[in-house]
Image 1 (cartoon, rainbow, N blue to C red):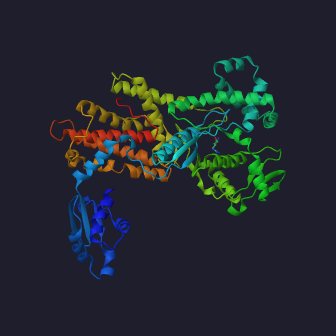
Image 2 (cartoon, helix red, strand yellow):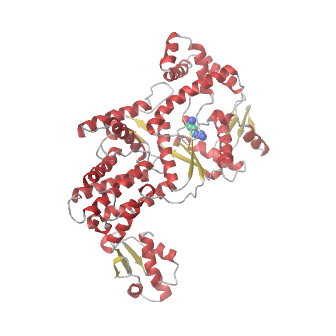
Image 3 (spheres, rainbow, N blue to C red):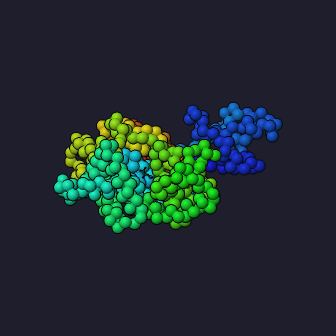
Length: 566
Ligand code: ARG
């Protein structure tokens, strides 16, 4: 029972003719805590009872069940409820300590399947910052939805199909024999492939025939040419190998790597459906689907040269996922630059007659600017994501060496702090906002950063090591004292934060919760001698343990580790 439900239950005694849910809906939270924790206004009863609200309030208060409250008093037309903080607080602590791993869980999903398409980088191109954002946001959204009891299917929809593949092949055929490239392919195959791709893009500006050659090779691939498929396979596994290095650093794992190539083999169904519904139109040799009636640009389904497009593959993908996973929601974590695209995709599915079209959720996000530079992947002025993460780890290591030179597993902790800092920075603001990324601001132990939150957790753990108690089952949790109330009450709001985050696919709610919790704990720590050896010490340690547990749990929802020492 939440506090509010407890207030509603107390009022229900006095208002037998009213539904308890209706009562609950009327309950307010006073702005000034001097007016109690909850207030019940009586204005709305004046009409039916033919009495002044003040009168109603003083009559009602006599009948209210006061059990479990410090006091219940009348203030003009309001009844004000003051919680028995010691009792309420003890209950919250007990809930956390009894089962820390599951604290905060809710059942919104009833185990329904949700597919989440995230990261989804393109083979033969370096993974861009957009893909990094997609990976971090997608992983956090997945973890948050799991916490509210959905069953998640994580899909890395690799961009392993399309003209860029043709270009790679053309480049490889032209320059693959050059000694430097031969050597590069042995020493650093992925970088070399990327260089080949960048080179053909740059040189194609003066040699349009290179673009032509790329198109030809792609057509070969579409028609099952053996040499083309062999190259495809090789490029794909080399690229995936590299992506996996980033995924390993982030501790992200997918259930499926079925990408565009997989869907490209399943095009007949959507195309046939579009034909059957008379939705396909000829337009200058190409076949399109008009979305004029939605005021949206048309979809290009089949190009004039006969090849299919990104959106045709996405139509096939959506049908496949619905059939394969029977999803209740199908999430795509992709940048805001594809807002229109996903509206097109959804409305095309609607026109095709699929009533599940609005189960498709585009979870969009804004740009990330790295050190003021916009990221570009086509011309080679690329910042490698591994470099970003490694720089962050190095900076974290430097700071840890200063703060805690004797730390034993310093390398491991530096990794957790460095990577966590990047993730936290990405997630702390609403995802559709642009992110400015400056390493020095990201890896700071002060301010609104990941390391700040991790440090609060490590501090709690260090206090607990000194305190020596780990089993709180026999501790009188009501003894924590008034100065712990705000902190404990905030611990009690964890599942509300999770719910809001889940409903809006918004990890920033959880990130902000961790910041606030860390701040409240640091204030508590500054004003309270937790380790003072008096009769309330075990209760204060219990508070500390609960904070540590909830911080760790919330960080885990964001895919951030919580080292015990740093
Ligand atoms: N590979 C795409 C890109 O880099 C993202 C794919 C998103 N998923 C999808 N089903 N369209 O922009």
